Image (tube, one colour):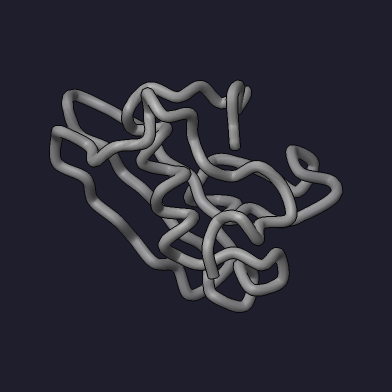
Length: 99
């Protein structure tokens, strides 16, 4: 599935859409990721959380939700990883310029 088939803008702007220069640690969750990502359902009343990332000290930690959640929204782990790497590269949480 290419990103042209996404149901909503998910891909970071070009300036943030590149490999992360530091060390990235990626976790693929087996259950919902609300707590590990520091979020609650109140933060996303109309959906689920597909992933999260937080850059720190030249590194970035990424958590990706289970496939059953991603599939519900037409997402793949690869698309979510690309999105979260954008955050590692400095893309804001407001998702400005998502494509």
